[in-house]
Image (cartoon, rainbow over all chains, first blue to last red; front, side, top):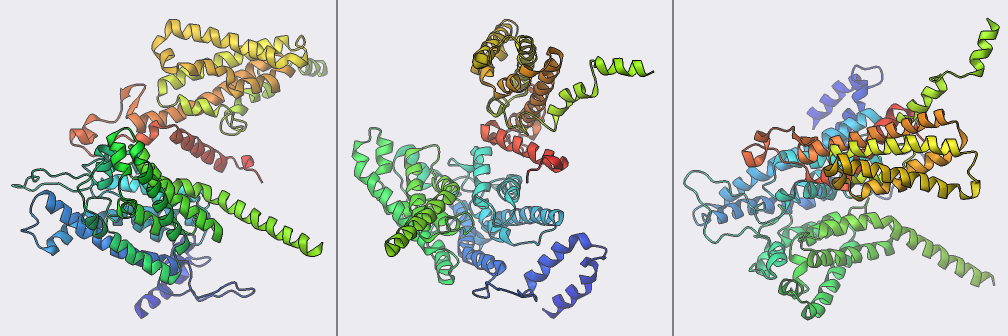
Length: 396
Length: 223
């Protein structure tokens, strides 16, 4: 660490007022505070409740994402060799190695494009660099299919950072979750690369290899939307060795992340719990009305046991890591319950009713992001009314 | 010398600075779409490709400039209580004329534009200019104002359509611009961006135009 400290001290004069690189001060400041705790403190009326700042918050979330990332890497390799029918002959490390080769470029592209744009905006607008993108940059690759071309990831990231975040004023001002904005952009822009049964598994072949007979790359939700039934077992959905976006498949890895978020108090357990309750409610309603459906596909989809929806597709991932985004979610305590519950309900509803969106969690969260300020407004108004009433009763 | 100056003052030249302003202002400072935010619906609906956008722009140009002149000529005859009805009649008849001409000479485009030609009647820009300008100004000025606003509308429409057609379909006016060899099906890496075919992207493109415009023209920034 001493090396870094000396290095920073030696370049500091260049970035200070009058220095050659004065304009790039935010970049210097960003690196310096990334490595060391900032040396300055508030002088009057400090509102600090504990020592955590934005950087520690963000790093904690990134750490919570690591299990999902590691599992996603292994799963990408596992699915690839499964498709080729080679899983008996390759080792665990070969699977991880192949997955890492596919996943790490996505992570690097997402970070370099996103951070590049953020740095550029900070320099132009003379802001301090803030670390809002550290989490988004990790989320974006985890919610993409493994086979997506890198330039599409770059474009989606750029769109999300500029249109989803910077036009509203940067970190903390965005209405929509940036990572989901990137996914929504990619989903509508390049639908053939974002859905269907070809994109979830890398089936690039070397010489002498062939795709195994009877192989299907569809996700559980994809199969349900088209045929009304799926062969994927609930246990596999829970463990996660199934096709899907990189980080979303393993409910176990996501639960580890959720535990970290809840333990550190960074992710709101109210939103997670109420979203799960909302999902269960909608699942139960669908179970109840399934027999009245005419088409057998729809009937099949509705008959999916209500609890299975929680481990299928991206529900768990979205609810744990993206619905709880402190910026775009509801702020009030009561609002969080409403917001989470509706997110869960909408997610299952979109899944089952709209075959064009086999995965509903993206749309559900984005929609509720837009609604969150409205929910907060009415929660606050309601509180004001209640207190006024109390005041009247007391004075009367 | 002095008499000459007086004469000039009395009779304003056709393209005095003020009159030129009538044409140039709507292009930037008081653009009907990006500043007054009128006529957005058609800017979203018919900008998927350049050709309909250009035809639409010409149609609006015709309707707005002729309509402005007609209203301006009638301005002292129209009782103010029924002026909206009179304006509607003028727009409607002009739009029917335009529609007939399109069907006669550009049937394909007319089919593509379908209901949107008829909806020029409800284009807020047109009624807005009738109300705000033609009712109070001379025919020549009204004509210039109509031209200016139609151009202001047209350039935004065409700019949006250019971006949307280029990235959404890889073509311009129907001609392939992005080389076939680039596409993934042909062994390349490129794929058209389907998002540009949806109306929300038009809104975002208009938003970006507004962003650029306001960052260069700071007096447009409110508060």
